[in-house]
Image (cartoon, rainbow, N blue to C red; front, side, top):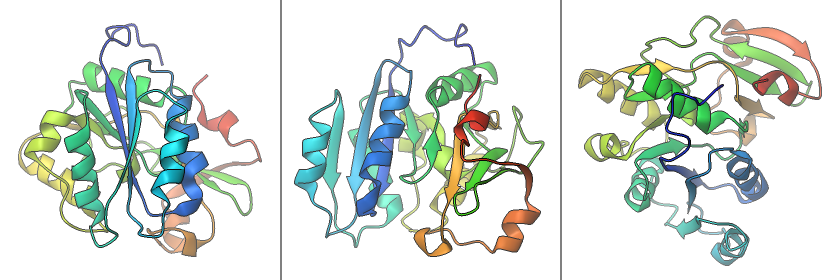
Length: 238
């Protein structure tokens, strides 16, 4: 997506990730470093008492504007995200998940669509899903791109720090994003979807995910695109 309508990357974006998965370090850093938006920072909140803060800090030191914090695993995901918002230095905030894929143009698209549609919150409703076990690429919730919506994929929430200071994530581990969006809608904030591109849900074995919908639900709410080992070729915006 062109960013000609945006002030040429002069506005900063804070990417916030809360994780309790020890094996997601590489994916988290790759997703952030891949972004082509120039003024950005990454704030990582470790939410597992067994995670080695020093290991993550050593990795963070290799890059510009990456900070890592560790909170007790007794603290909910919602509270961890709010903590990250408090540490953010930039106007715009992108919530990333630790185990999905964010393409190079993800942040650029998010801020561009927010401005074009004059939305308070943007993210994905229609989006790609890659089933890693059988190499199947699907698209979820077809027909919900570039429009006003009531719900977004929680891993793709993009908004402003000022809004997140007014409406915080609720103190819970499941459904925190849905409740946040419901509260935004109740208070009259415009929520819009972006395109299907630049992001993919990566699904492995069900036990590896916090969100555990049935296969029947996943297939009823999505459409097969292809079988391929190169899902990025379909997901990344050309």
